[in-house]
Amino acid sequence: MNPIKPFCAIRPNPTITNKFCTNTIASYTKKEIKNILKSSSKTFLHIIRENIDLDKNLSPNDRLKKINSEFKRFKKEGFIIKDKIPGLYINEITINQKRITGVIGVVPINNYTKGKIKKHENTIRSREKIFKNYLKITRFNAEPVLLSYKTQDSLKILIERLKNQKPTSETKFSKNEICKLWYVKNKFEILSLIKEFKKIPKFYIADGHHRSESSKLLHDDEKSSKTDAFMAFLVPENEIKIKEYNRIITDLNYHSPISFIEKLKLKFHVKKIEKYQTEKTENGFHMYFNGQFYLLSLIKKNNHTYSPLNKLEAYILQEHILKPILGIKNIRNSKRITYSYKSDKMESIKNQIDDGKFAVGFGLKAVTIDELKNVADADLVMPPKTSFIYPKLRSGVTIFEF
Image 1: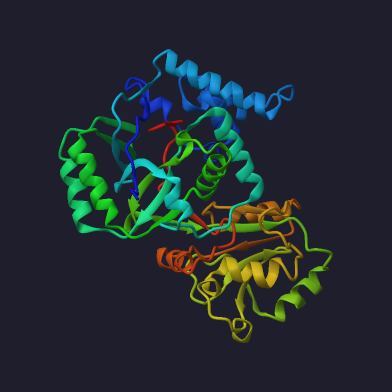
Image 2: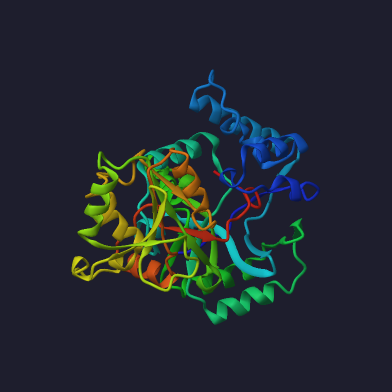
């Protein structure tokens, strides 16, 4: 079973690459999106703008059909161009002088369903369906799934040797961000890369659980060779960076502030602190509630079952607070919980709670790559949105059409 296959990527015309390739919508404010759409007519956001400027007179499916139509127009007018020979793509991203190098290709769905690609997070059912429908109608994917693997010296040497050639493209998105791409289309070089990747026993989804699952669901429906793979960016695990994913809750499930704290004290050491502690000297995670920061650490007798999950703050929070105290039984689909990945010392969470939009927020430590792998290897899954992982690739560097 091949872990990766070449494909004919659609890539932006070199004259517009630095404008075309955008960050994900979630990373922009509404004002920033508006400015991007005004500043140029040839960005990836223009292709998907029907998902940005929601027209109430259009059904969701009609919006997706317009995205597909705009995608075709960009191809017809030469703004994006499909490579003629299937290849693999070495992608080097330099952000703030930190370099990340990986290989972009398509990964057969069978690798995912048969466990060669390990997942570590639950997905949210409603989002699975949305992404599946998006793929079904638009027929392209512009953001690869991020897969990590244990570094192999022979593979690293091969990739570095291929990088000695002149890059196919080099794009400076800003003074702190440069993207280099090598289009590997020589059959011998492709086979050499595949041979090295075959030596790797397992790959781990670092980012893109919903994209992976929605691709599988689409293939289950269509049973077509066109949908039997998804685009992926394979990166050594030592180049992956994991950040925390925090939680903010709308209400206290009818508890008064006093009874909520008393419930917490049955299972946690609850310590008041003056402010969010950037460097935590104690075990535990942060809570902001009723104008006060707290540090919560689980009383040892309440953590008696050995499992890789029991070392994760997101799981402890889920099993000992969100479900039993706050009554959020279905973590995957509850509208009472919102996730925040801003690394701002919980300042945005504090502000929203102080403004009365939410009742309580929790700040968690980032998981490690080893914790992630331990959960995946045990065929367990973390709670949804446990980790926020870098690199975050720009949309449209390579596009997979099916």
